Length: 202
Image (cartoon, rainbow, N blue to C red; front, side, top):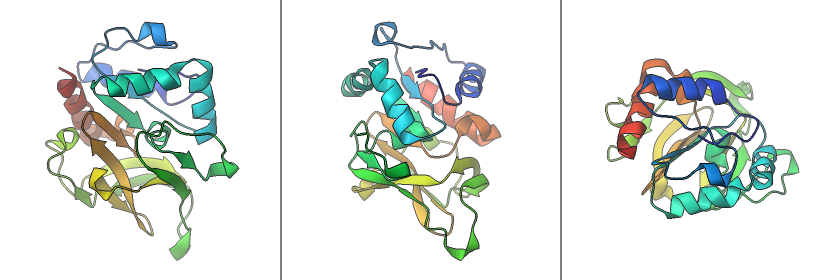
């Protein structure tokens, strides 16, 4: 699990331990070693996440890990970081660029409060995605965000959720999984998801 100095590290760590993971917290590329999976948790601003990863030389390490074919899970800002850029606070940082698309803000229509804070449903789940094995469509998960990615390639969308507008609440392609919601705060559903990821890592 990547520690870049912010993010919801402790609760993600505890949740991974609860589902049987052997967790190594890394702060530099040399500590990644032979890890069988990588988790990038995130809370806060897109640029802060990217700049911190760059300072710790973990941005390129994450790209190399993904290229190696080993499983990768991004959570919240760790999900957004997989895309090319963000509109947040006139962001100028380039994301990991694993997926084409940018991170945009909720339109704020229908009188809905921004950020979205609280429980919302998975309106649609890609049935082939290993991360969501045993998770029923309509399940509730926990969100805290004002921004979300808009993937160019719709085929990577693993779940959709509606908050005034429909958005991609999770994506999946090959060995890369990512969720806008927080599995570590999503109780039984979240633990099922994290357990699936740990199992996928072997």
